[in-house]
Length: 470
Length: 157
Image 1 (cartoon, rainbow over the protein chains, first blue to last red):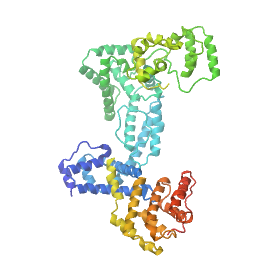
Image 2: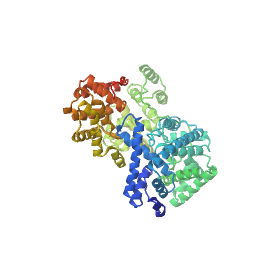
Image 3: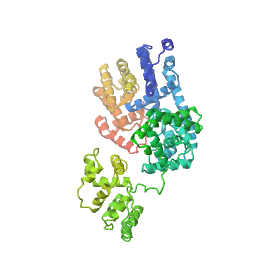
Image 4: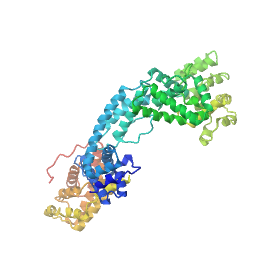
């Protein structure tokens, strides 16, 4: 009766692997000499017997052999179900006690039933997530809710593949990675997503979408296509809004206020910034009426994750990249060039004709930006003898950093390929020889006149992979 | 995962003596057809089975397949005592090979029956023709979706 020793032993092993709980617990118990090697082997043999039965069930009794990978997968499924039972037991000692008291088959069967009931729980939770969703054009958010999670429920196989988490869940959550598998992963994901949704529900949906649009404009991205966490963007501005004295519900922060906050925080000690920030976070929770302790803890955990970024932003003087300001004026053009959308010959001829009929550089630039969507067409315009010397600077001025970085990649293709990490745009510009191609000379001249900040921003884009496969 | 092997190995390591006894016990049926396995033959077949499972990356629960192959093939007029053990070894290898190649779409009993039918009626006892021609044809049929299952159960014992 080895198990009678367990409860008296204060057995409490550390570092048990949550994704391999039962086996790591049994091994720890054996190392602690609470169970004999024989008892451990007996437990393992019982699990093998469960596996034997499952292999036969898997092949519907028609085959006595299966590929080894299938057997391994079935074993993982068994252990996952058993771990699900273990996870419900408070302490490792209680769990070990239970494992020694009962047969492995019994625990597996309870685990299988538990996993099935968790699938029902997850489906209920999914309905709650759908009911609280934010109306947004964010693609990853929408496809995760509308396709990936239902897809998981359609394909999840509790009997033979309970540990599997095959689902194309792209939308990232603010609370970090979830270290779980199977239905437990989905449950935790949906629980967090529901909290994030309920948090966002405390704000005006229009304000949230305006904030996301500003986010896209600050980072010069087509934001609906990017993996942005809505909750985090909203929480960030809400906290800073409190720090600025404009209230937790306000998400629209004027750029001037960010400058003032930057000045206010610049000379402060890190510990003072920390106190200010934590107090603002407390205010957010209070002002938004967050009483549910789970939600409050989640908001606090994610909010605290912003603190190192704030301290860094104060040190680096880059607060304007952490807080999303209200961006006024005409929206900047979205990324001009799209793959595979070249004009047909007739449309191109019409464009050249219209360009030759334009009154001045500004009109030409406007026409090009409104009609050209392909980088190839853009280059063809350069060779179509329809631009004059004074047209180029105006055209380049109307391009964003992303478009300019695409042109730079063409011009400095060798330098970027040979030494991508050491590439310096200003050095490349200053050492570029006179080109035989007219537009290249104009571009280099234009780039040489840009201020340091913009040059740096373009250089940063050149170091990334995004949108660069031209 | 290192855990896997220690759960799987008890499934594949049947006691050798028990396996030998199981195979030798098939003599009760096969000797009616003039075929007998010695303990040495049984060992040879067991080794061939283990090697085939290893090579094909398969895991078998129990020892039934060899029994079934012997029971179904021993009435074949094309097997004689001289090459009995060798033929069983080759059939066992062909069986596991086919389990993989047919993408798990044919159950053990059906596959053994088909092999016996082809062995007797198309290959006239040539194991080379069975493995090299007929089973490849069967594989192609299954992979192209033109296999509709077996139709004749008369000869099954």
